[in-house]
Length: 202
Image 1: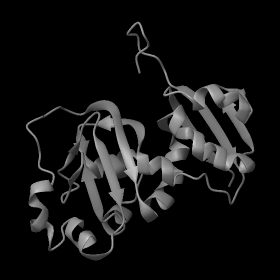
Image 2: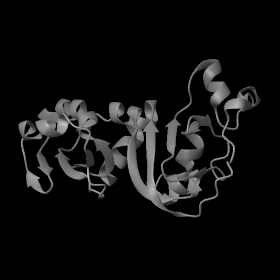
Image 3: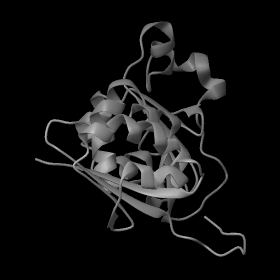
Image 4: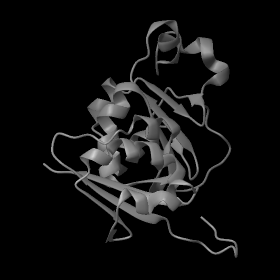
């Protein structure tokens, strides 16, 4: 993120600790999309499994619908994620819509006009940020792991979920300093970037 002078500014850091058995309400955040810093210019499978630690069996069996920049993906090994891309992941959706968008499904031919195809852009592997969107069971199952790793959101997007989790928080620190929810009001009214990390006691 750039300030008014064009210089790069680092996101603020917000670190939360929650007791065992409690879950940070993350469905809203992941439905809108969170950004992660990662290696880019690589295939979706490598990004999810090698870089982000998602089990390959989970990718193959649970994540049945994948969109890259709004286009349905069938081949998660060859389809490449570049800096600034948006990757959406979902479990199987019901009905005809779900069957049509399921990757590698028999009805994939019916949505060929909105299916992902490799572009002419051929950036090599590097580092950057990717926006991740998670839906339904995938959000509930993968969301906590992403939050423990750390995600980038805006202060405004964080307001609702953090207030919903307030009663369960054990500690709340902003840039390494313990704070109260009231001391975050300026952040909640801004689009400033926040590096959010949520740890849950074992």
